[in-house]
Length: 441
Image (cartoon, rainbow, N blue to C red):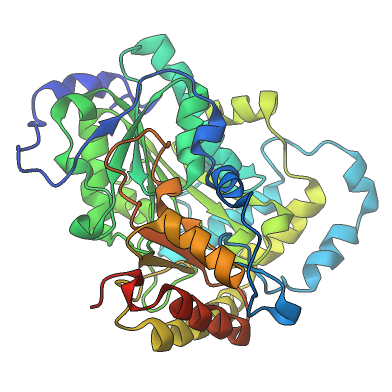
């Protein structure tokens, strides 16, 4: 593999050892063209607003009958009070542009977090080379596609496919669209244990892929790769010459065992960071979505390219935010409190939903992925009759003109409110959708 870019020289490898997927492959490839599309085609909440625009909300189980928004993964528990202390400790710092590569203390805090969370050896990651602060993981995931698109334009113009899970985070689809790359929607369905089966893709698709997005624990289904799954995925990416972008923003929000990460796979595969990046955020771990603070880590050549793109069209992370973020990354008690909150919500959900809508206990995240037969119809019904706002799974699975949508039977329900509100909302959901709302298990 090319150590400079993570793609390029290894493209020759992809023409021989990767065999075409068998005809009975479980993966139905849906590949879009390499052209720029309107980003609104990929934005689920814009589409949801349009779906419900002419539907007044029905009587809601919320306080004072107010609608309950279960469509957005917006944490409702406040971050620690020390965040405000750090943000106001040096008001003068708000008047200065932040250093693009961040402060040394913030980078060191990020490395220490990764070493602790993923049991990585001390010194393997260099804070100066391998870390880039981000105003949230979303910004890094988006700009990564733009940065890598320049690599393809320079060296391999035919390498323009972006592998992304379907359903998945809309940022992946939007990034591919804006970058003029060809999105490949890889079903992450019940048949594939809710994870995209990249190895089943045709050889030509793998050989012309520029990058792959992979989220674990997955948004929305909560499925997680084990370390062997990460290793197999990394080997495939390196053999075929595409970069692996691991979205691990839910890596601290798990129900039982801590999920494995892509850096653990890189370490096990010889220790090289070529072609691999991981993305982390304090939005979920620290319940600080409004802080806009995260980081990416990995291949230093790719880190440099994304850094250059962010300097041109992005936003740096203010120094006071980095100071608060460093303290959050070092807070070892915080994740335990956060997990306890969500575990309680899942236990309440299981009591109400067990045996309904294909419910199963996820490995991580804080979403329910419910099979209701027709997610769009169910979303309108729940809003019209109960003032419950949920997200149709189809809106997370590609543009409206994509055939064989992997999420059309589902709705995504965010478990973010307090226990009492969550119980009222889910009880009302079952009352509205009834036994015909989805398959019984």
